[in-house]
Image (cartoon, rainbow, N blue to C red; front, top):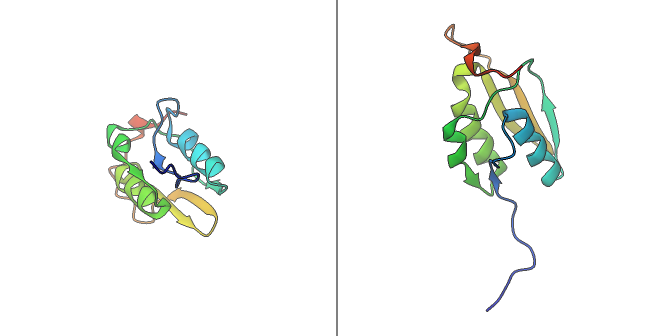
Length: 101
């Protein structure tokens, strides 16, 4: 049986992560990227985050943006950076209930 010596990094939540920022810091560290976290709050990891399981950083951040859209948070990747920013089209219904300051 062939065993590959290198396998692609899988972007997924770990039970140890706990918050969005902690998870993204791990993703950045593990994949030799930089994290630009440009928001003032951190957020607990919601149940839908557990469904993210991909080798594509673009797919992973797109899924995170959908999950955290109600919080007014956009996650993206550009070059060697993971970017976390306030959503430009923030609807007035954002709730701080999920924030872990």
